[in-house]
Length: 144
Image (tube, rainbow, N blue to C red; front, side, top):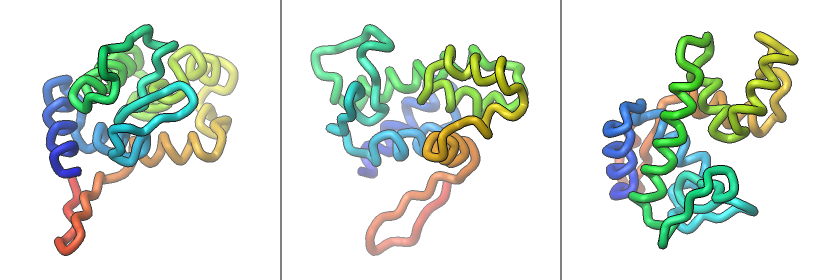
């Protein structure tokens, strides 16, 4: 797992994303399981093939998946640049899609987060507002 965390930090830095936030996103998306799979998403960053029309030879390759996840998150940050709560909006857009978040903002304004389902709100607040903690058995926890 430490190898994956190191790779995620490197990818985040290369995409000019806060490594703490990116590592927290990967933890929430896949719990660092490179073979994680949901109904329509795969890998460390749970990339949705249908949404992004992207499918490499091996979507479970950690570097490829992390880079695509970072590119998507970076795009969401660029899309939300200048908005209040830009980080939370970018993270929400990562999981829900930017069009759905746009609708939430249009319909509910500053109260948009209140309209998120409990697990999604926890996801957004957890990624956007926490320190990423690395726990290695037998060692002291390290917060980023």
